[in-house]
Image 1: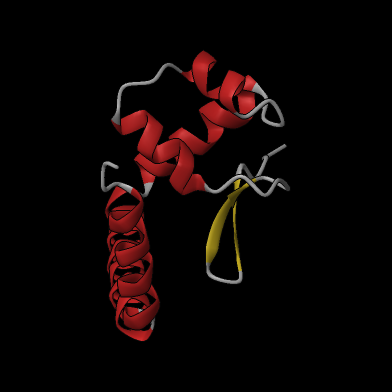
Image 2: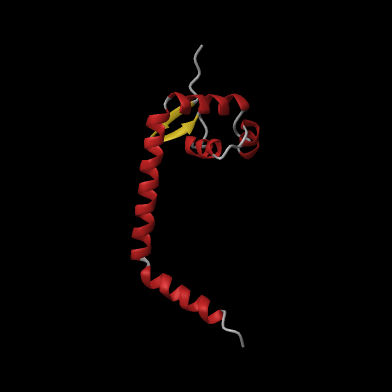
Length: 104
């Protein structure tokens, strides 16, 4: 009986039927975090699910690494767009922060 540890739901890789993204586990894995610590960080996941998700990643590493890189590019693009769209607000907040830091 085969189990599906990772599902692609609407373009996002999720661990089983949870809302935990595969991305989250892969980044922790890359940082060298133990599987047991991952389970502590995501108590909704079992040890088996984390091992299964990481096995899925390792079996599909090229595809998942490309998916993660695409996600990083999209996030950076959204960040830049947000900074441009909200430039006036950001400037106003900076002025307020600077004004509050002036010693009396």
